Amino acid sequence: NLKYCLMAMSIKREIKDRMSKLTEKLLKGDKLAAAKLISIIEDKPDEAVKAMEIIYQYTGKAHIIGVTGAPGVGKSSLINYLIKEFREENLSVGVIAVDATSPFTGGAVLGDRIRMQEHSTDPEVFIRSMGSRDHLGGIALSTQKSTRVLDAMGKDIILVESVGVGQVDIAIANVVDTVLLVLTPLMGDAIQTIKAGVMEIPDIYVLNKSDLPGINIVENEIKSMLKLNTSEKDWEPPVVKTQSLTGEGFNILLNKINEHWKFL
Ligand SMILES: Nc1nc2c(ncn2[C@@H]2O[C@H](COP(=O)(O)OP(=O)(O)O)[C@@H](O)[C@H]2O)c(=O)[nH]1
Ligand SMILES: [Mg+2]
Image 1 (cartoon, rainbow, N blue to C red):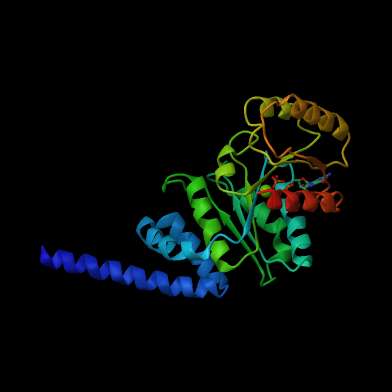
Image 2 (image 1 turned 135 degrees about the horizontal axis):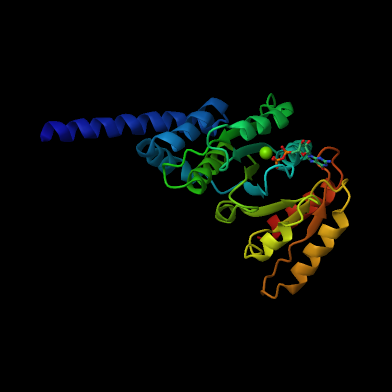
C-alpha cells in the first residue's frame, strides 16, 4: 500500500514538473508548447487538470471572439481577413477552429487551415484546429481550456471558429466574450432558425457575401426580427455587411467588435 502511495506521488510530481516546464515555455510564446498543451487538453485529463491549474493565473487579458454560423457562410475567410486587420494594429492573434460536424473526414478543418495559411508563418499568429474528439466532457469545455492556453501565451485576440449543430453554436456564448453570427443571402431559412430561440446568442450579426444578390432582403429580415425582440438588453446587436474576400465592411465590423469589448 505504501509502495502504491509513493508511486502515485512520484507520478503526480512528474506530471506537475512536466506541466510547469511546458507552461514556462508557453508564457514565452512558444508555439510548440501551445500545441502540446492543447493536445493534452484533448487527450489526457489528468495532465490537463495540472496544466490548467498553473495556466489560469496567467489568463484574463485576451479578447476572445467567437465566429459561428453554418458551414460555407465564410467563417474561415472572415477570420483570415480579421487576422490581417488585427496584425496591422500590431495585435497578436490566436485561432482555434472547432468543427463539431465532421467527425471523420476532417475536410472542413483542412479547408480552414488552407484559408488561414497566409498567416501561418507569422510568429505572432497561432492557428490550431480541434477535431470533434469529444470524450472529455464536451467540445465547449476543451475549447474553453484551449482559449486559456492562448490567453496565457500572450495573444491579444483569440478567434474561435465554431460550426456547432444547426446554424448557431449555442455553447460558444459561454466560451467567448463576443459572438459573431455569420449569415449570407443564400440562406433563406436562416432567419427562421434564429427565431427558434437563439436570438440571445449573437452580439454582432455579420451578413457575409454581401456581394451576392438578396443581401438586402436578409438584412431587412434580421433588422425587423431584432426590433421585435423586447428583451431588456443594454447591448443592441448591430448588423454588419461584409465581403470576406475583399475586406469590404471590415472597418465597420472591427469598430463594432471594439465597441462590444468596451461595453463588456
Ligand atoms: N462571394 C463571396 N464568397 C465568399 C465570401 N466569403 C467567403 N466566400 C467563399 O465561400 C466559401 C466558403 O468559405 P469558408 O470561409 O470556408 O466558409 P466556412 O465553412 O464558414 O468557414 C469559399 O469558397 C469562400 O471563398 C464573400 O464575402 N463573398
Ligand atoms: Mg471554416
